[in-house]
Length: 269
Ligand code: CO8
Image (cartoon, rainbow, N blue to C red):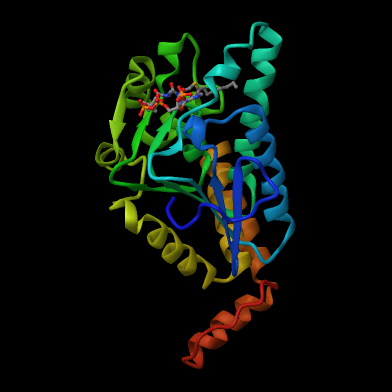
């Protein structure tokens, strides 16, 4: 993404920026269109630990460097070396466990899809809480054309996002599709011109950051509990989380601010 390249980074394939509660993770491996090799998966994992460890960070935006690609998939040259059943299963599980953390984390994760989001790249975007896309973005799960299947949770998440029939069609044809089609099927929340994508993501992040931190995390937890365990589990989690929030200082602040007609000053307590 423009404006994000060239910053010094302790990572080989990532650039991290921190902006008052918003952490921005830029996948930056231009020679392979930001494809995910094992090193990049390890770096995403380490950077995610770093973001989560600091309570100041509440929203994580993931995007790709450059104009062309979000992430063009798992690294095919590296995957080609995967010749045993155990190695394949382990590589899949490693990425899968990492992406699952985006769903179970207290952080709200946004994918800013700025170009190709194919295979593992689309799987990464799908594991975020929601997605915005540049009008130039292209999506697809082309794995079956390589003799494999999505291995980072894509066989499960696409059906949950767009419904079983459509997910099956897209997955077994390996067909690529554009941002407008992604919007049409509900895979992304909004499509904007490439140059507006980062601003849109920042603006929505600011909207989230203005809310009570514990309430935002609790809302995500309840929604995820229902997505994972069904309606009963979700409703149970909702009540439990609601109860916990009644003990929070922020609830009292939010309601006092309403009554006193002023802006709430939340502390995340
Ligand atoms: N892996 C490795 N290198 C890649 C990848 C990739 N996924 N995608 C692009 N590159 C490299 C190209 O090889 C090329 O390098 P070089 O210049 O050295 O030849 C460079 O990036 C630029 O790419 P192109 O020249 O191909 O650019 P084009 O504009 O012509 O095409 C495309 C862009 C359409 C995105 C094309 O590059 C493409 O089709 N890429 C592959 C997309 C794909 O099939 N992705 C799925 C990969 S499999 C996967 O993601 C499985 C996930 C689950 C794994 C679980 C176990 C680990």
